[in-house]
Image (cartoon, rainbow, N blue to C red):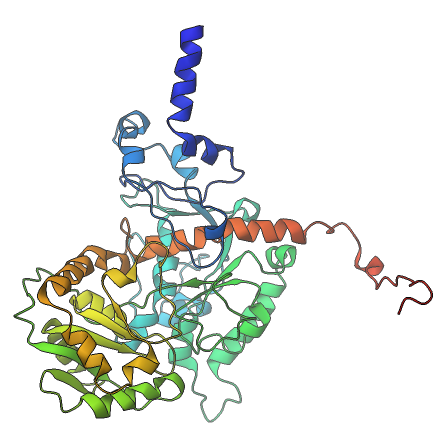
Length: 474
């Protein structure tokens, strides 16, 4: 008995985080995919707030993989459920999601059968804000039994079991396709859909139960949800940045920043090097912008005549993407300058091209920054410094071959975090967004539990309490 007691103590203390994890209520928030080596770490107090995602340690699961695997080499589903983000998704009519892609439902289902049919998503600039499409597909795919995929999310049919309530509205696509009124319309189709969504959500028991605090809404395009956001703001938003939001509506404590989907193809088999990339600094895009984007004009006039700098107007029209692809792949550094909003797709195009990003955007928010140290593969320059004469060029030219090569190699290591796939893959953008959402859940549940303290008290007794003050108080 003495030996067995010490053996128990030894095994317990060798894995303290496993014990702590199992003692937590509803600790089913982090992924251990079927074939992956992810494992969750319990967040500390500070990291429970803000835009946080979680990457686990490989070593924690390798030595247990054999004992936890079933005969077919996969962990049993009940064990997996303990590490999945459980999501309840509304069965909204197809006009809110895949119907915007001209897909028509058959029978009673409002969803496509993702085993056989994946509706096509429009290309061009539409694609950069397609996060809503990929996350919805991933939820639907979680219902396919024995599907060969790395899972971080599973759909549940009972909302009381869910960690988060997902609203499947393709808001960015709705804005891109339906924000211009026809001569016969007083309201745009986009405005009508937002009004219908607000009416639908606020009538649901799930919304009434939490006042929307446990709901997840994607509004990645800066102009999407312009009409509804003021009414749905208690929900968690998935955004590209906070550029067009007041802090009372969206902030880093409550919401999640997601990457754009890059438009430039990934640079597969990149054999370039410091010497073969002959352009020092590259920028192609809209030059004349407003607000924070005014710095683009300043830099254009100061850099346009430099021989080893490419700074010109460009768009995706005609062969714009092809030219940008060639330009970024042949450049050492790529400028990412604030435009009408702090962020742009250009950063993620640069990462996909292994062109070291130079970020000039003081208010930018970056996805997965608790996991990724962007200073290892990006150069950050304050706006006030960037517009100082010769400051930017002197800084860039001071970075030698060895330092640049180190950042170039790091870009190739981290690029998979910004890839959107279906089915989702271990550590891709879809998985990382879900993990960022899961890291919001503990703080969210704390707020909900506090909110429910007086849920049994009828509203009629909630009235102002007047406390009499003693005479001569003032």
